[in-house]
Image (cartoon, rainbow, N blue to C red; front, side, top):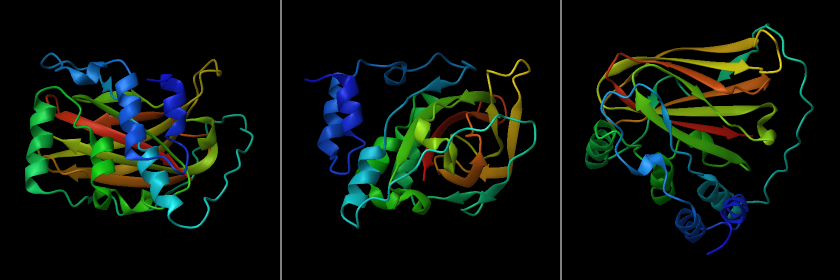
Length: 239
């Protein structure tokens, strides 16, 4: 069947295919995302699935992928970094009503909606800002109520790039999103914040927020929603 790490690395190759993703799933043990969560569990649960196969496969049809250079990290400071919005705040994706209803059912059952594999099967539904990139490092989380979500970006995200967040909820809400960089090496755990205006989200309709960042890579998302709201969040680091 193959080593899961080898299969995961295969997803980053320009010639990756949907079959590579299926082989990776088959070789990966079932996770907490496969079973319903207990009701009103406040802690965020992570369902990490890579979308790199879908994004890189699309790039392979175009010109050769643009190489990226990892820049050395600078010492963190408490000075806010600049952030540029590259998609209208609160822009939504074109998702059919039947799929939106399925998303809501999954959320209320305490499960991830599986948006990353959904993008693989529905390429036109992907956020336009990540359709033609040469690098993608994606993860998916889900939970209930307000949460502090720890991200796990790869080394390629250091120094600068773009982070795209896709939020899906089970009811109409106004959600607060704050991106932080927290450096564990600092005795005070210094934080650099990238504030984002609150966004409105409707049931089952993914909302997209995309920011370019410079300096330290965001590794924390502070999500604020009313108690009892079930949510799913995709974080996608790109060049």
